[in-house]
Image (tube, rainbow, N blue to C red; front, side):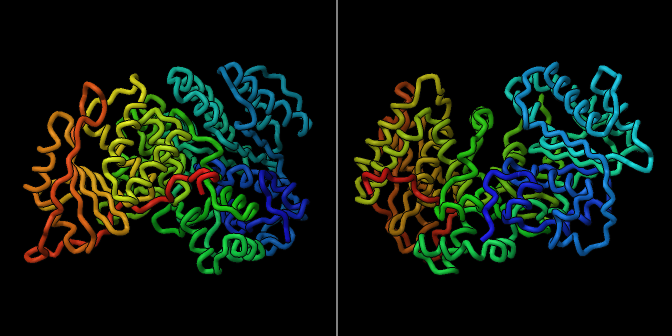
Amino acid sequence: MKKLPIGTQDFEKLRTENCLYVDKTALLHRLITEGSVYFISRPRRFGKSLLVTTLKALFEGRRELFTGLAIDELDYDWAPHPVLHIDFSSERIKTTADLEDFISRQLLDAAGKWGIELRATSYTAQLRELLENRPVEDKAVVLIDEYDKPILDHIDDTEKAVEMRETLKGFYTTIKACDAYLRFVLLTGVTKFAKMSVFSGLNNLNDITMHSAYATLMGYTQDELERCFDEYIPRLMEKQEMNRDECLEQIRRWYNGYCFSPFAERVYNPFSTLLLFNGAEFSNFWYETGTPTFLIKLARREAFEPWKVGNVSFSLIGFSQYNVENLRTLPLLYQAGYLTISAYNKEDDVYILDYPNMEVRKAFTECLASEYSGVSQDEETEYLLQLRAALRKGDMEQFFETMSIFFANIPYDITLKNEKYYQTVFYLVFLLLGMRMEAECRTNKGRIDAVAVTTDTVFIFEFKLHGTAEEALAQIAQNEYARKYAACEKTIRAFGVAFDPETRNIGAWREGPRPSVSTSGQPGQACHLNSPTIPPAPIPRDNR
């Protein structure tokens, strides 16, 4: 068995140390023969650095590293080129002076390897001198990995982020000015800043981020997973006590789902897939590598409504309208990998965004719940255990008492401004309990604040911030909300919940009489809510 390349992002090391490599070189051959100046963005830990180091080895003419791969059988001259490889993720850059110094050091290092003495002192002049000193017939290759890292490191400090952006803009503009001396240019990053903000000088840049031909350039397709990891699947099957079909379906639910073009196949997260087969355990591998605190805070600041995920229409221009001065939650969540394309409406030319898979949905929901409530994830788990036990017993007294304790622990500096905030917390809690949950559920007479479904019960909730629990129940009855679920063949329980803005907690709750609904005149619907379930919060081993 070949070794799994855990933490290995260098193509040479991967190939010389007998590591497994999912062959993407046929796509690379198309990339380098059909164009010369590219940009591609992908989420973190998705194989960008491996892509860059593979191209580096290819352009250096190191054919021995590609023996047995697809490109070795294709028409390519393997002529070596000098390669300028800059990885902005290799160093934490605090100031623009640090950024200029970092770029200058990379250029001086390349000049030493190419046998060129740089006399210029500014990084832009050094870049021009480095590239223009090459013979025309010996054009250079420029590979920039994580081009946006200096900006993202300061994304919560707009002034500093803008300074980093402007410094990088000067660098990239110089690359364009040296086009005659370049064989190939590739920039990778997590975010796709608007061209006018960073790449105004690189007007010849071919953005292949959403190009269907390159949608599977990073990540694993279903065929690649089953073929390349065939030796590892039986061990996972044995440990998880599953047959092959069950095992493949579970892998798909956890780690597949990333879609980078509406006309292309979905792919697996490579980082999580490797760790899955390494330990033969399902877990939130990708998410545990770190979620930007700023991203979660931005979601709360913009009153992000998690129940709308999966039903969010997004235009193509929205993917590229991303600027440091005007950050928006949805495009940032998409570019960072927390949302992906789930559908495309060709007639209206709009995209539908959703969580890519169970790994991201579960972990992001936990993180949102912690941010909205101010309660730590460890404390969250304990509350969830109590809430789950109460629901299993049908003990709503205990359920609402525990929810009251949960709300009481929300720090005072987290402002609960409106009914929607309480609604969001309820929604996240029910999702973490592993229940199907839908907020603002439409009926022919109005919108239900929240509906949750278990194996045998439909829970209907109506919330009031400036009203009474009785008024909430009256609204449920008057609008006949229960009728929508008449065909479910489950027990229907309706609750009116009133929040007290003074105590910032549940003021009162009431359960209405069990609705007796008839399906005559209106068929009702099966209990298939838009929001799929996620695994329940983990139970501490001592309690299993």
